[in-house]
Length: 110
Image (cartoon, helix red, strand yellow):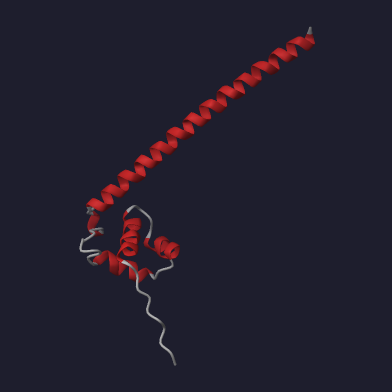
């Protein structure tokens, strides 16, 4: 009987997984998304990943986690402002159409 081949993950892969958990994604969600065992991610969270301890337990946030949160917040703000701009331009376009339709109706009425 053959033994299952042991899978090794790179340090960057482990860091990314731990950072995903630190940014608010559940451990189960990260494990499912990356195709990794939940216990592996838990082990990486408790170890030095890439010679840097990532503190997630007991509400402490590491610098990596703080940076990830800041980047995500900035991206969300830029996406929101982009969406607001698009919606405003769509509103202006629709208001112009309404005015055109009103003028057209007025012409037919006489």
